Each structure stands twice: as structure tokens, then as C-alpha cells.
Amino acid sequence: MNQRFKLTRKLRNISGKTLYKHCTIPIVLLMVSVLFILTANVSFAIEEPASEFDSCEPCHSDIITNFSSSLHYTGSSMKGEYEKGAAGEFGIDMHVFYEERGCSACHATSCTSCHTGEGGHGGDITLETCDQCHFKKQTSYFQGELPAHKGIAPNADVHYEKGLDCIDCHTAEEVHGDGVAYGSQMEAVKTTCADCHTDPEKIVNGMAVTQYSIDNSAHSIHDEKLDCSACHSGWVITCENCHLETGQLDKIDVDRFYLARSVDGTIKPFINMTASYNNSTHTAFAEWVPHTTTSQAKDCVFCHENTEIFISDRDGVILGAGGSFLSQETIDRIAEAPLEGEAESEDTPFFVPYMAIIVILAVYLLMKRK
Image (cartoon, rainbow, N blue to C red; front, top):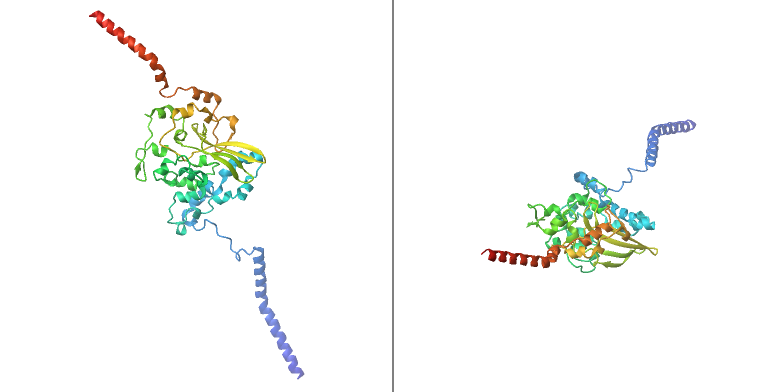
């Protein structure tokens, strides 16, 4: 009996040693694996969220690369302009302001922000697509309404009346970006009136485009001095007293019109924005294409007898890509310039008697000779 017990214990020891010998390696490997997982931050256990561009990247990598630095994606234009203007004046952190005021909600975070078709394909880019974000200014004006479609404006844009959409003028490169991180819209947008109106072969939506002609006296006088929008914009808004603490605006005025010198040297419309913060006020102007184009241009009197529309450095600061206020000397010269037809009307009372005298003398001499 004693021998049987000893034999059983011996067998158990052998089995235990064998089991320990055979299990040691798997246990060690398991422990190493756990240690590796922990030190690797469980990277393969928890997947990182997919990029908003992942589904488009395989086919559209070049567009996505450009888009990542575009104003549509970064919103840096708004931040930069406010930092030059009211935010800089009042010491407001624009990065915080941009997020807290929901400004970032109106900037495209993915391709499907605009391309809403199935899988991003098949959806047309229409005026309504752009209106999701641009209803505060561009698309409202374009359709002949006040910002955010809150009222009827003096006129709609002639291009809207002809049935054009935003993408009939604005290119894909402007929308997606071209790889350059611009500081303002006026730098990023390259579309000009001349793109269509100086191209006799241009057809848009099946329509031939009216061509710019230097034979027009107003065009010849102001050629390369005034931008088309200076005369052919029906109206521009003035934002009065935007309260930065609340985001509320006291008034939108469409009765005033301001002109200054663009960064390209021509005279263009400028938008006037007045902001208040902690009982202080700041006035700024920014170069602006109103999207309120009319076929009927402003008359000579509008500028030459209302020189208060030309702003000077005492009126505020200029934002955006640059540009400059007009000097008082330039404003005075505009006021003193003769209007079209003025010289002829002033000379007529003197011209008629001279001609009468000449005719009488000619008749007298002819009769005397006979």
C-alpha cells in the first residue's frame, strides 16, 4: 500500500513538471502580447475614426489636397479680416470667437457638405447648394433680397434674372482651392467680368454674352480706372452697429454706396461694417463685389456730384487683401471734372452768335461781290 502511494505521488510530480514545462512558453508569449498591447495604446484594438475625406481620397487626392487649405475649409479669411479689424481693436481671440459663435458651422468640413448626391456623386451644385452658407450676403443679394432673405432689396442681379447659377461664373478651382492658403476672398476669387464680357465666342446657358465695348464713351473715359462693379452694382449693404457680444445687428442700410481704390488699382465698391464691443465702436471697409449687377449703369452725377461716396482714411480702416482710400486731392479732382455733355451745353450760347455773325458776313461779302 505504501509503495502504491509513493508511485502515485511520483507520477503526479512527473505530470506536474511536464505540465509546467509545456505551459511555460505559451504563458510567457501571452504575457508579452498583453504588455505589447498596453504599451502600443491598444492601437489595433481601437480603430481611429475615419477621415472625412477617406472615401473620396482614392480618386480625388489632388482636389482634397487643395481643398484642405481653401477658405471654404479653413475659414481663415473671416478670422484674418476680423483680426485686422474689430477683433484686433477690441482684443478678441478670433479662434475662440469663431467656434463659440458657430462660424465654423458654415465652413465645409467634407466633400459631402456640398456634394450631397449618393456617395457624393450625382448631385448638382445649384444656387440652393451655395445658399446653405452664403445666404447672409452673396446669394441673398444675387436673388434681390436682404441678408438671410429677410426682406426685398432694390434689385436682383441681372445674371440671376437670366437664370445663371453660382457655378456659371465661379470655377471649380475657386470652390475647391488651388493649393494656396489665401488670406481673403478677394485674393482667392479670380473670376472677373472680363472672363465673359470680352470674349465674343462666349456662350453661357445657351446665351451669347453682351460684350464690353470701348466705343461707349463712359467705358472709354473710365477704362482701367473703374472696375465694372463701380458703375454696374445696383446697391451695397452697410452693416450698422453689429454687437459682437450678442451677434445682433442694429440695422442694414441699402441706401449708401461706398467706393475706394482696390488692391489692383481700380475703383471698386467697398462694404462698410461697424462693430461695437463693450461700448466702443470700430468702423472698417472691405473691398466687395456686391452681386447686385445691373445692365443700366449709374449716371455721371451719381459719383461726380456726390463725392461723399468716396471714402478717405478718416472714415475707418481697410480690411481684406488691401486697397486704399482715395486722397482728398483725387476726390476734389473727381468733383471738378466736367460731366459728359457739359462742355457742349456751356459753349452753345456763345457758339450760336458766332456762327450767325459768320453767316451774315459771308452773305454780305457775296452780295457785295455781285
